Length: 223
Image (cartoon, rainbow, N blue to C red):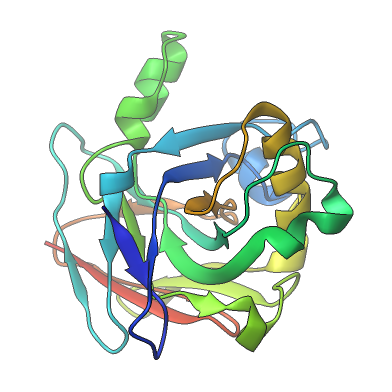
């Protein structure tokens, strides 16, 4: 079973399902051509084996995937669920979160857009090998629940994305509450909580450094 290590521990967190929320920062919603009004969040999934764990203090080699000429980064906060629940109230939702990590929702943007234009499912743009690089988990018991704090991404040392977690349209608690209306959540479910504006392309040789306050950094090189 795929699992993610807990920081400074021998523990590992088995991953059951990967849920991702789309267009959860207003400025990113605009750059993707959508109206950032507070409509209900929408979710898609990545396969569990898309996880690529990158250890602290190391650079993970990330293969440039096939069939794309427009490969994009999306830096995101990832929440790890450790309790079973359905129809969870937002006020209680953070009780279901074990901890947080830094993640990248890597995207074959040209394939995603092509399929969207054809009114077809666009999993092919989001769901592929190593499409979900991720750091070790920082338990909420140590870092608290992350409702605000800087989130940013650099490519080859140049800032590309910079925002604050408080700019999410839907908070992590609200995402959990909404998601639990459609799916029963179980320990091992994880949620990629959306990316800020200024997503963009990378090519082989590029070094991405993605960071979130209190959760450290994720270093990934495209190879």
